[in-house]
Length: 273
Image (cartoon, rainbow, N blue to C red; front, top):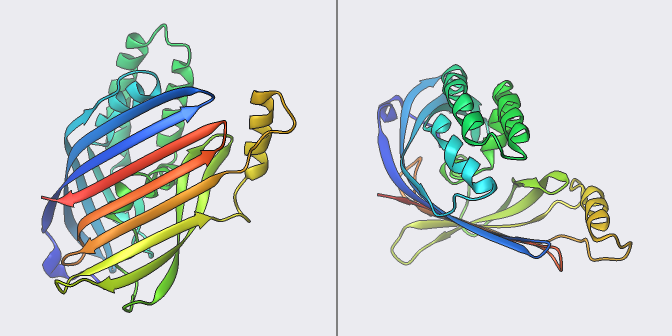
């Protein structure tokens, strides 16, 4: 499907919910996030759509450890202006200068607030480096939530009922590996009420996953040469379709587990309101 100039100016609001549970080396943590999103199509140039995404009413349950940084820096992405790429996923970030200005105002506040924090320099430097590279910033957000559920790249594909097509996802920031590459099967089905649903199931792209780096890290941490290091992954998405380009309700769930070392569970729901 393609956008029409008649769609310019259209907006839709969503409620986004995220549950995350994490257990590593016997240490457990969890976080719950709620936020509202307003998404609007602001222009179409050479068949490339540009969206404005605004976040409001952000809440999270955990303000400890690394999660407190998530809460503190979310404001720099309160307004995001982005294009879509040729796959219908998040493409380029157009208001990078405004985001950098927000970060420059936020950074000294965080340095003061966390002056005794052991890893503050790592977090500050990491965020600054990402914001200096617009391509890297877009890459870091494309498969992150809620942007994946907003722009999963499935609406622009010519799906036929009960036909399975292949796709690609990533699970970002995974131990020593940059990410977990995921190949997906995507299937369109018709529901009893006449609406359509897309179901997505994923598995690890073994050829491109840096399993050796994960194995090396775990063996060092455990100080044992023989220890389970293979990653097991369960991954699903579901989209109940409404009028283009929106899904009425979307869901993404994943469980990544290395027995005895790591358990990482995520559940994300995006619902039109």
